[in-house]
Image (cartoon, rainbow, N blue to C red; front, side, top):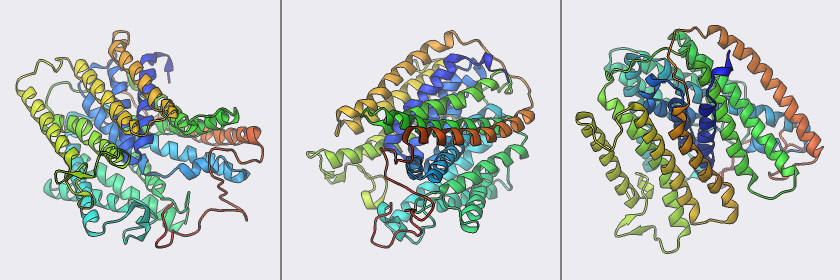
Length: 534
């Protein structure tokens, strides 16, 4: 593996882009927040790759990068962070080991999603969009139906009839059903429907085996979506074997192990910062550091692909609706599902802003419990219509304000997206702003400025690359072996450093959590009815 040819501009832009996205993700949370970081990182890689064929597919990379990185947002990790602060030695070791595991799972799925457009032909790629659209529709209906019939309260979700170790098993089942419906209309399975089925069925395999059979629970009573993510990583590797996508398998594993180091090392740095005695928002520093390291962890594997991934078709033979769908999902759908949380914050914190005015709520989330369509949705619907309309016209007759080159189109998409999310993140924080928010919003804004400069000027200095045929099979096995060594080695080192810093004392900055032994305070059962879910 020759790392000398990897453009430093690409590595830095990807690191800072994921840092920006990860800092914003920390304010919005879960799958939707993580998808922001995934889209930014994917576009950063493509724009400074020197691959003109990748520029042609930049919006597809953004979409699949967002989807891949989103899955990890389902995992609970704050108690694992707390374990690494513990006064109990075995709990600290357990905490760092599981931080590595969570980081691996999160980044591996993110790397897999981002890599798919680099290795699929146009015919194969086009087969993915209908199943993905069907899954999105299924998940939307799931949210509406559950809200309408069960009306669950987030902090009392354990009282729901659908509660199963606080996991997303319903979403996994809906995805499987959606893919089977598409397969029925297509009269059989194909590379598109199989992607969803491999992931969905493997999710259940991991969850059922690890949690329900082996009784392994990472942070009870928090959710055990980690087990489903284990299944999905195995599922995507099986999918790569089935369709001879060794390059995707390599990126999955290498990004995963890099992510494991990033996630656990970011927490170790937080403990070092705390030991200095200085006071600031160290949790936000940790998150943004993890984001930057995640970015390095995915940029390096992609750097090794630059002249080894196959040359992609650049002729415009993909269905037009897939082009519009990809841009719409990134610019409109992804920003909406995050931005609506900002509108809810305004209602909570701005006294002059009522929950409803002129008969409509400020934000309705397209949910019965919130009022269906609010003013926020009305403006976003108009924005979505404008986006689709403009793109549709552009395909018939190119519009002057949209660049003619694919590099220019990608730069415009990156520029609009990064500043859109930076601004709405700031707007959410503004109504409750305080000096310590400069560590979050201030750093995010500064990094976004640097990203803008790198995005604009970077292509001038990055040498052009071209594709080739290359087998990654040997690299896959080497990555697996060295990755396991990294898991064991970093966990031992980080465990030792924590005890050098704090001895047997509990490190400040988190509640005391003890996972094992007679002093364990880990809950053994799900919360009781009427109590809030931790």
